[in-house]
Amino acid sequence: MTLSLQRTVSEAVRPPRTLFVRWPFGHPFGEAGARAQQLHVLLALLDLARDATEPGLIVDAPWRWRRETYDDPLREGDAS
Amino acid sequence: MSPARRPVRRLARRLATALFKRFPSLTERWLARNPIDREDDVPWTPLARPVASCRVALVTTAGVHTAEQRPFDMEDSDGDPGWRPLPGDTPDDAWRITHESYDTGPARRDLDVVFPLRRLRELAAAGRIGGLVEVHAGLMGHVDGRHVAVLRDETAPEVARHLADQRADLVLLAPA
Image 1 (cartoon, chains in turn brown, red):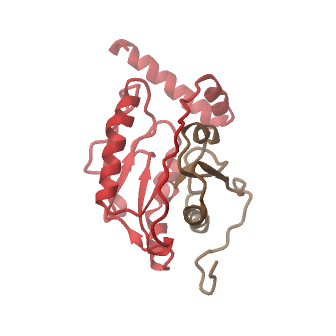
Image 2 (tube, one colour):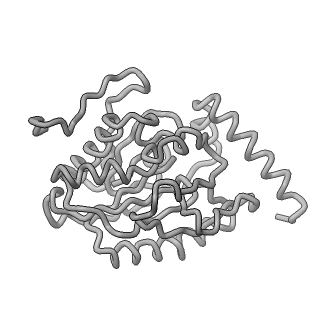
Image 3 (tube, rainbow over the protein chains, first blue to last red):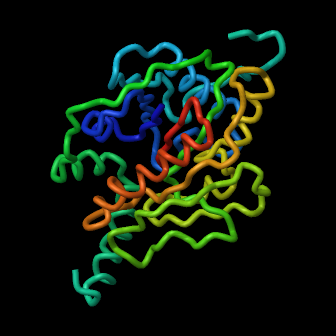
């Protein structure tokens, strides 16, 4: 899977599976110290690996930079 | 390019980087003027097993390397097309970042911003992935000019062979 910060580049290079985040350079997995945010990005990439059936698929992540609240995706009892 | 012009081009790159940091929308304008070769074929390998049993490898272009390794070449205006093997058992204080084309401050405070080894270990402990390979791969994202062919024709196949040797089921490639 490829994480992308530049959709235009991914559209040209065409990796097999891409998750695009509209975030500034230097923060592909989120902000420093933002464990839950970083986990959400990784889990979205793993979901993409599981679900993608179309070569060259680019999924646009829904998260806005510094305007989201991230729950802990690994908290006990959360099976999502 | 003559060696005499390299400092000028390096200065220009630093200036461009500063502008891109301040005005991210300039990146799209730059790409419009410097189109990237479009690939016709998309490589595709179906996932061979459930994600929860996959060995995951990280490939970062954020300029990450260990303190013992040679830093990426920042003097060459065309960048450094090489790669560094990144052992997963490297102590937290032995990681280094050499890259001048993005603000490395957040990544120096928290390496998981660009190279989320600790987060992946959490996912392995939670049973979301099967585990991690022993040795990941690090590159430096600024590669241009004469080094592009080296990256494509020499480094990339070498990294791919390394990941196969590491028995990676899933490879996660991340920029910075």
